[in-house]
Image (tube, rainbow over all chains, first blue to last red; front, side, top):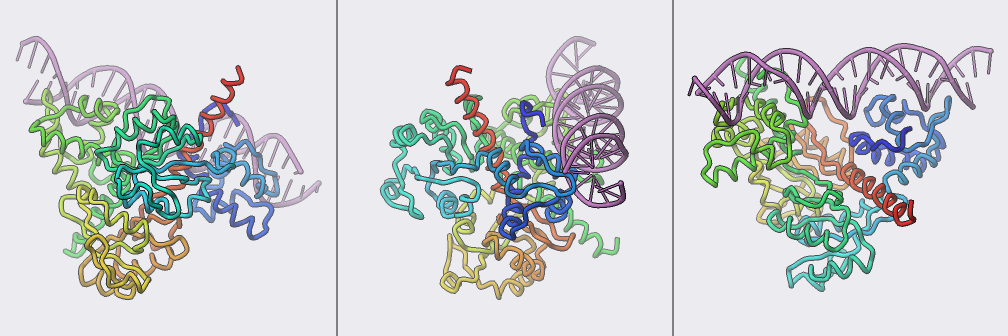
Length: 220
Length: 220
DNA sequence: TAGATTGTTAATCGATTAACAATC
DNA sequence: TAGATTGTTAATCGATTAACAATC
């Protein structure tokens, strides 16, 4: 309820899952959904669902649950997904191309409107229907098109330098797909997709599991 | 120190960053590094670094810090990155190709040894030097090559079905790049790269920041 | 009204951080 | 030895969960 406190990150990260489920419920023409039902489908606790949804400021109704349509709007508004966000993608390599080709981003209110790369062979071409521009044009185009979000998908080595350029171009939020830890002004919002961290969790667990199994095989 | 308790996930996720820094230190021929120095470079607290590193079971030395080479080995052992892990990648689309082309995985002890796809146009071809097989061959090849890790990069709609097949093929650990929440036996280890969650954090913060700035513009 | 589901307040749990004795 | 840095134990912090009164 307290709209001045910043929202807990773990809760914000769960909101897209609620949104997805609510959209499915809307397609099924259900008008209300309870926290118990959401919790069951997403394998969470009902109380956690209620706490998370309260972030949006929209209250549920006793006996009924949450108004599906209203809650969809409330979550989208909270996340800034109510209007499509135009973003530039910098680095039209393998990963960059993959991200542009992923249509699912439209569900997240994200539209990658142009690509930027230093490779002259790529500049001027189109990837998945989006034009590739030279990095030299980034500042000019970002200001002109009022783009304030950037997806960084260059090599680790180039990441810091390109990020600095993005900031000069007026980009406020950077979705960082590189392994680099960027050093930028505090006012710039950076969210990193840390594949190494994710793989570390998976492979350490696998490693333990395999050790356990080998132990069991030897009759321990 | 208690090696029976499972490791806290946030700590495990930080280990690759330590590893990367330690490797850099080794290249610079430094033999010891203190928690204070690691903390400074990674923007963490020294005490957190010490707690995290203690997970590996390797102790530091008072006055000196941590033995760089020994700690690299200890972290790699802990994560199961001491020997290269062979993995299959299922779904040779945009994202799948990008992941195969990303050479950085070698630093994480991961080697994607083969690709699988249902698209007949792709089967038999090579992507970034790896052969693409039909999904029909997954079970046979996984057993024969003793592969127990799989990277899932198919469409959201196919994810559950393909994951079931992976489990039938004896795959124990699944790195899930799809938006699907997989329902699998509890013994299967799943780690999901949740792009929607990550974007939610970024765009909700951006949204707040822009609202704030617009407020400031209007003289509030 | 009775009953189901909500939001609030308090308790629990786990991760982070602080204080400090132990160590080389 | 003196001093820097460690690992341990305790305190703090934040997120999750439990209990329950409020509500339609």
